[in-house]
Image (tube, rainbow, N blue to C red):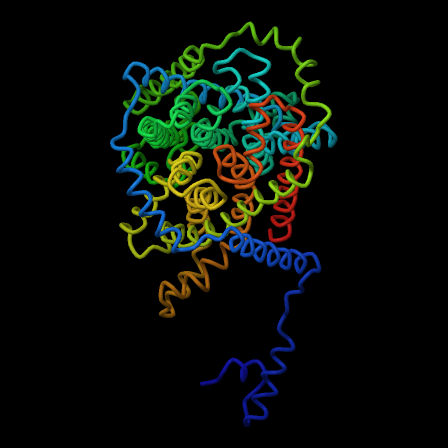
Length: 583
């Protein structure tokens, strides 16, 4: 049979001519030119990976230590006895209060993110300067820890839910506005330009030509952020924000571990229930296509046959526009309408149960200069820069080591949770459910339990971050692998390749760019989370941050916050550069 080389270079007359044809073919083959920027990015990745390995070695997490901790855990739970809970009425009140302040804070961020995203998107912003300002606001609010915002607002307002609502709302603006702006930049420009050609205003262009296209992305992002805020609300209790987090902090500080663990279990169940409700809302409002791939999403998708909100295909089933406007009240339409009114009722109820002292919103302005004066100028106090700088370095080490452990475990679990990698549906569903369970455990609660069992130090904080990050990074990896083009995978299967060979040669290489972006997002998240875990004794600069806040040493708080901001912004800038280079 004529070989490829013979067809391209002529008939083979011997080994010498065959080698010459091979060399000629290789010389003519196009070669991908590596840019200096891509080489620099690759070397940077290697350096970061090396630093993560060194950090993991310095923290000294060993399998023997983990095995000893298991024995300590058994003795600890035996000594604690059974779990205990607050009185049913009080537990219900605190649960409703927590859900109310989280929903209100998330909705505040959702509303404020709309104008910021409008200004941050390149195709809707009126001026490049406004775009730069809006992008900066998004990055700044995302980098500023919500617990620090809560500290500041506790000084300005009465104790209660309002400091937590504002802290959650302002911190969440960064993520929601970023995702919303990215969605706006990816729209089909046809409808917007058509409205402009017809003489429409900028507001009409946005509300009619842009918003209907990005509404599914906005709803999904807000719901995802609400889940994150519920888990993060636990730490706000340590700075005086009312809710389950405050009750849990009081229980652990008084060494009532049975009560503290009981409240932690309630928070975990609440997080899982919230994820189920979010999945149901995504399916009802967005349809199966835009609802995502979570295990609960598939559960509700099998039962929901209603047309998604804003779906043009669903509208065409009713014929003309006039017929669509007068479509009959089918059971699906009745159900979706009822769900919409229930959502409105839940929003109103959340604001009501939050028991906001509205007068504080008018009176706090007079307190701003005095509060700002307490924080400025920044000062490291008796600790000095060397001590706080070393603690900040420990925080970065914890984040790097946790990200490395999370990456390795998430790559395995996330791959098996992808339907084009898992050997069967049962395996995929099992690992998807595992990711949901892990994602429902707040890292702070996990860190508290580990600290109680193993003692104070970076080991507990690192393990807590590593385990907690699997739920998020594993889900992102699974979704990314499911989105890769299937052509290369099918071609390899057709040649008789095994599933492992298909994964190594097609699935993983195609998903590697998204994998890099997701890992840097995890590192960015871990830097902030490592700071918060230090508040409960997980090592790092968080310990000094909490002590400074409780001791009213606000210049030291300002110094630590500036260090955190610089670190987070540096990681954010590095991540943006990596995504740009490997895009």
